[in-house]
Length: 185
Image 1 (cartoon, rainbow, N blue to C red):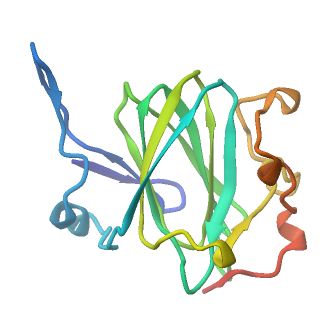
Image 2: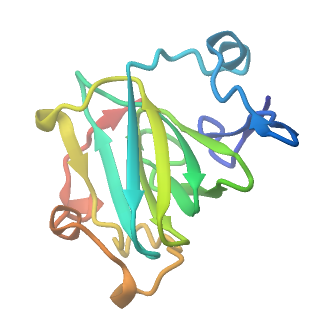
Image 3: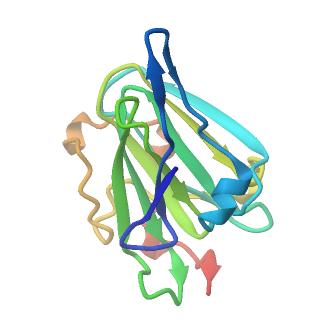
């Protein structure tokens, strides 16, 4: 397993080994001991799976606040996504900055997004499936979000604004500046 800290070192790109032969392949995508050795010792309590039918679907930017803060281990098992994490920890030297990676079925990479970050992704291909492990259960009262195209964040989404496919809920999210601080260091 290869683990690479990104420009915001708490967010990590994880590449599990994949062993192939004439039958197909085998991959151990998660191993608690190996992840702990790499600095990811959080306990996962739930797995989520999404299918996005169209290219240009944006899901996010989402997070959960205390007492149900979620870290996420995200992987794409069909198609491809542009996956982004935004640091919203007040007092962090990287507050308001983002890191992103392309995750795909072909590159087999995963992104570790710890609590304290907004998370979102945009599908790069139709019929894209994403599976992610989370460190706490979904809780409606703790769910928060920021509009995907917040001009203060200036995220380089790989889709034109008029072509983005959003849920009504995500399309109505506020800008980060209008939100109270959710995380502090």
